[in-house]
Length: 102
Image 1 (tube, rainbow, N blue to C red):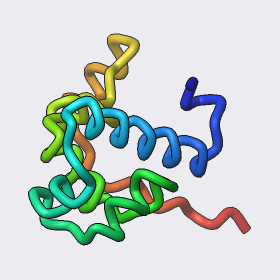
Image 2: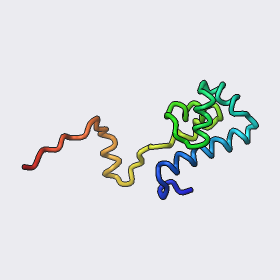
Image 3: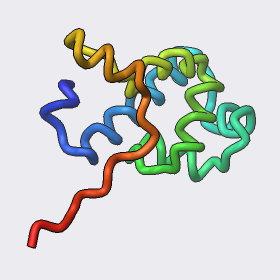
Image 4: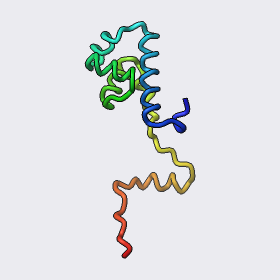
């Protein structure tokens, strides 16, 4: 699945399916994974079925299934130009307030 062509709900659902596939490949029950991850069985079932859970549940389950390392490159900003690299080194903390143009 190409995430850039999918809706947020489709992406969430696909992530849930992938985690379910990983759990099954490790021959672990939902109850085992939920207990080891410290989440409720219902939360794990919801994750696998719809993908619509809190980020914390997602991270706990991913960690339990040995997938947390794969999330490290998510949302890393990679500069494409020299100008962007230089700007990234300046590391702004906040965006400027836009002035009203009236």
